[in-house]
Image 1 (cartoon, rainbow, N blue to C red):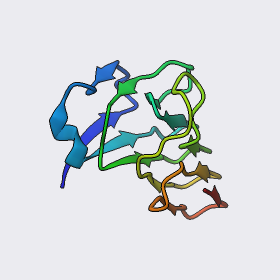
Image 2 (image 1 turned 180 degrees about the horizontal axis):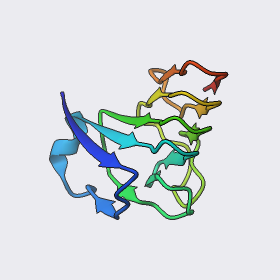
Image 3 (image 1 turned 120 degrees about the vertical axis):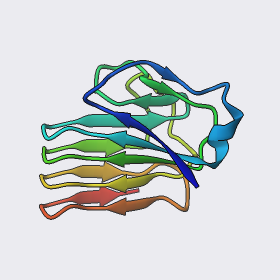
Image 4 (image 1 turned 180 degrees about the vertical axis):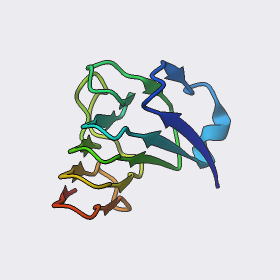
Length: 122
């Protein structure tokens, strides 16, 4: 399975909606060492917490948000301009810091907390 990586340190509008090859790829959203808010919904992902979709994609094998050292919030429940909850698989990897990790609607979501106090729910 191949991967598409979008780093939070380089915010851009990434539109992969018309790319049929993304159905078998993981879309990796990489956070910073500060506090990050990443929201994934059925319309795409808001990777910087500004209420605007930064990554648009029609279908992917999985969304994989990876947090940095800050106190981060990652959710697959939509909102922040991303529409409703995502039905696509979420593989969320928490880092150091007090992270809140919330999956989407998929039964195959995986949430991994980091070394600090992690609140995980799906």
